[in-house]
Image: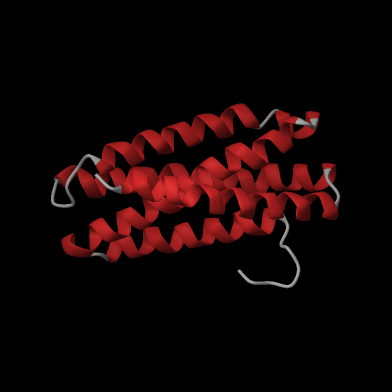
Length: 157
């Protein structure tokens, strides 16, 4: 995303949410040969997204009483997604459970995205200035770039 102005963290997270939704839609239409590639893209996107949120967004939320209340549930939802990702990673796309687990993961992610966008984003917008949100956006992009190699390495099984 080469923009002259840094996007605020909420815009970045929202864009990633839309990207993951597209990946899930592709996975639903994929045949067995394409399914593993789709899953790998979902795995990478969700793992990077969750780790970056945990390192950048959640610590910022802890600074405000109004947003701190959401962290525990959000972290639990991230943990649920991580467990599902690892369970799917251990399966073959031809296993009957593979598509079922991806549907389960999609449902969990949709729930998490809904809560973030409908509850957390408005709360954090009330607490932080545009400048703070943009600075967090910069930090989010930088941290995500640093994590990318580590996540790619974890994908190779």
